[in-house]
Length: 611
Ligand code: G6P
Image 1 (cartoon, rainbow, N blue to C red):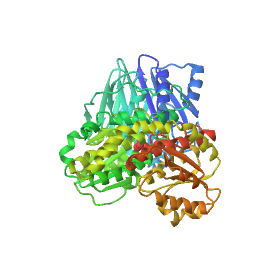
Image 2: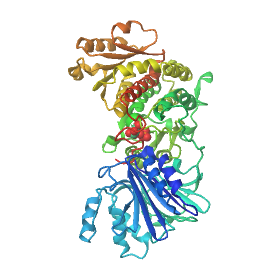
Image 3: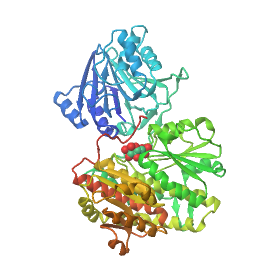
Image 4: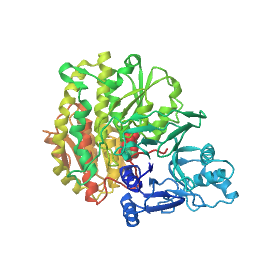
């Protein structure tokens, strides 16, 4: 949440920083701002709304400076106002700060600073930082000393960039539990929350570690670790991926484009890994931990949002194929549990962005347990990718729309490959092993077949666009699909939607059913289909409209429900991929029919870097 970009060099950095903010807009888009330090003068431009609004305003004035930093905000403390947008400044308007994260003890610091004569104009936690630096600057010899002293006082999570009008050649940056990467150029250096904002300019990067404080000029980067209290030799890494600029092409928005990337996503995630002809699965990312994997007897999956639901699909897959018990936890809950954890347990984190604060915290929690930490991550080089012992990349390419679509498809694909990998060793279920491998290779064509029915799904969606509530139900492998289907609908259409295990309907949700409360039933072929039918009957008996996803060829379901969306016949265990493609399209067309911005739903952000 919140995106940060910085530039120091010989050129004017305004354009670069604004472009970078646009690349980072997925992190937050309530408001945006930039600060320019030119000579001993600071100029700030801030606007509520999208970065494009800020770009328009700035381009009228064409300001130039060799030190520029910017911020795109996802509000935590204080409403969406210009006053609360970043950069925030000290009372004397000589220090400017952009911040991603939360300063938990800001109220305490603010009260202390007030007794020292400081006043506060915003409701943000961030505003205490420039004033605290200002406070220490009166007692300490250098800006760097004052910056470090301020950091020692704050509690919480942050990536911070601070600049001073007295030092127009230097960016000061710090990181704790929130990502920040430095880009190294020739006579210029860059800063950003993630490499996508700077990779057009350089491939050489330094990922800051927790407690790092960096001092960056156009020709030098020095890093001091506050916890170790020593200067560290920053490791310069080469970004090993191409400029994966996500371009819209002919699509009206990124969400539709990304939904339509499902077949390609499965192909990329299985390429060279799922080898049906040789009856084998090869996961290069796990090779370094093969020996340890032989001894595991429990897997704990941690994730948030859509990644959590992918984890639930993985739970069934791994248990069935490898016979290893799996638990799936919401990362935000897991970190506060005090559960027994043996060394033979593996912690598996799933994350599209690799930057979700709660998932990172879950990984940190087990740091000293001596357990293997694995990751299924999409964003190459992200914090989770770097902090896990090993893992498997999704290789789905950049996902721009806030609601996750192709990443879910890739995560389930990778989870089935991990299940196959673990199952191969134990030979727990050779029949399923073979069938799953074969299905993985056929899945892209089947996902394409679902996409080919987009127009039909659109028609159904438009019929249901005005309902206020929706229930999504499914059993066994289709239960996570119901949860994910409901999440997608509420995220982008703002319709109240709940995912429920079909068998649980009679324990509560059935009470809500009437003609104004439709159900989306996932009723594809499975040994439990008849039981799902019974649940649908119970809904119909109470006058509830029903839309169902069914397997091609199932004609009889038409007599039972109001509308049917067909998907191709597929192995039960991998049907969630096809369910997801269909429910993504359903949610998408409802949101479009209601006139919403599907790529940037209200109140949400793509990368949630606060707890
Ligand atoms: C946010 C996004 C979701 C995503 C979740 C977890 O809420 O809007 O789409 O599923 O974070 O993100 P991660 O990057 O860890 O998969």
